[in-house]
Amino acid sequence: MTVLPSSPENLNPAKTGLLSVCVVGLGYVGMPTALLYARGGHPVLGVDINPTLVDAVNQRRIAAVYPELADWEQELLNHNQPLRAAVQPEAADVFIIAVPTPIDSQTKQCDLRAVLAATKSILPVLKSEDCVILESTVPPKTTTEIIKPLIESATGLSIGESLHLCFSPERVLPGNTTRELVENDRIIGGVTPQCTVKAKTLMQGVIQGQLLLTDAVTAEFCKLAENTYRDVNIALANELSVLADEYGVEITSARSIINHHPRVNLLQPGIGVGGHCIAVDPWFFVEASPINTRLIRTSREVNDRMPDYCAQRIIDAVSNIESPRICLLGLAYKPNIADFRESPALRIVDILKAKGYHVTTYDPFQENPEGEANIPLLELARDQDYLGILVSHTVLLEAYHRSASTLSSVMRTPLIRIF
Image 1 (cartoon, rainbow, N blue to C red):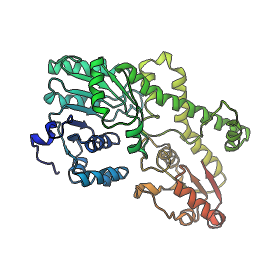
Image 2: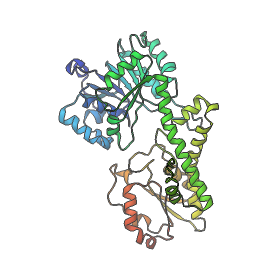
Image 3: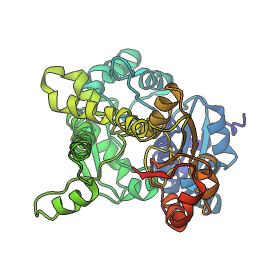
Image 4: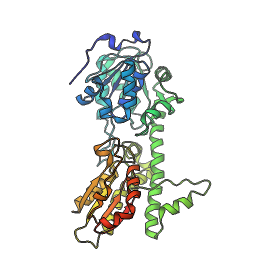
């Protein structure tokens, strides 16, 4: 593992006149966040327990891990922006915690172990007037009732007086991270108003969107509410799609008619909800208040059920075929990205394989994160009984339309569906 020399001047804000920043967690949010502040001139240290990511930063190979960040990495190279990485935090003015908060698959409760470990890792280097910003999505009151007492008891510093603590959730869309990180409005929720102002001082120099100032609990609530809103509306679309199948209605045509109503915008139904936000965050509300979240829980259950429902549709389609061969295309959690977290497509594949079906799969972003221009669709479909496009990557749809007239001729049984 390569770690650049830990020279005090590397994180010395006097060199730039800007606050020095330590980003803990170099994942899908942490890595672009580190680059965001580095390109703004801030001395930045990225911290991660994964030596591969540390090496990627120090050897300027970030795009090899996150292709979406290639342009920002090139800026880093062109302007020699102050960014380096290590496996342990060092002294800085601002500490940004951006680590995962998954849920337990059985209990549906938030796993805060990474957040707690990240917080404990910065305790030895925290000093008076520092600012800690939690960006990881958490259940309401985590910042005030868990993180605040942990920091105060370990450091002896008082939050809001000698130390600052905020919750400021990211609002980014995988596949469009860099633009949204800069342009989207951003919530800043301080434990005290003084904490909010401290974080605003940092963010206003790199974020073009409006900075929405509030308290920590409100910020946590708003982040969960944003993703819950989307989850509930997706659940309605998915449930109506199931009903359409029951009534023999083609949902795409029906949706087009429905959305002609001036006050209706029915979302596109699909095979379920994936990713690390919408498929996870609503459960934090359910965990915090199970009695008052009946609609939220039901929506989560509707969306979680969709992979099983779609798998059964495939099984029904091939029920009269002996030893059917099934080919499924698109495995990411949504179109046109190389992100497979919580993917409902992968769940469908697992369900079919567990039932003994012969399933071959292909995703153009799995081997090549940029997606391949030429999909060997005819070869994938050859001698198959069922061809399903689970995730509508643009390159898959283009390949399908190019080959549509000849697909049936190469398949053993021409059963084709775009989900």
